[in-house]
Image 1 (cartoon, helix red, strand yellow):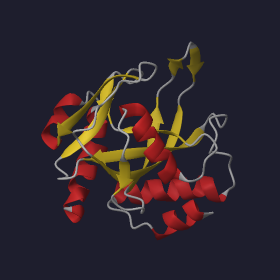
Image 2: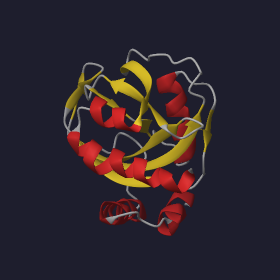
Image 3: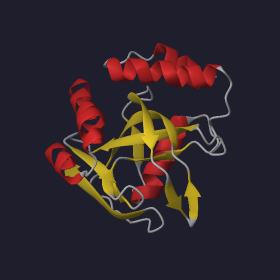
Image 4: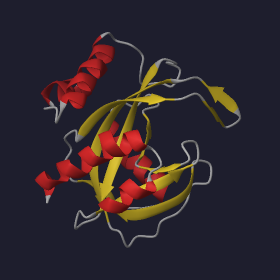
Length: 187
């Protein structure tokens, strides 16, 4: 599987990525059916770290379930090409029509805990998101649209604003700060 090969080649940025990469590979190599949401303990997701052309802003959505501004992305839902999923999710969640990869390589990996919540009137138990992040680019002048069933806002933020707008301290400290820092290699 291409994703397993890509993950094996991926060089972790820090200890968090090193440990999370190992855990994601363990799930994938065991042949677990983590590409579908029916896997209630853990499933594959992908995130899109969408930056503008000058790479000094990031596109975020106000996610209703998490009650916070956050990166874009979603579930694999049976698809193993996570870059394709990341691009589609970025377009669906933001309304942006032209999203392109800065690189097709994996940008980051994370194992994320998701608390139990209600989605579309049904309770979803706490579980893990085995997440692969891709670095994408879009034009900040494109029209943004809200997707009311998932978010109530879409906006571009400077990196300082990201840390102020997100109400999830763990993400700011461990994920967003890392993603911003890694951009220095792409400027």
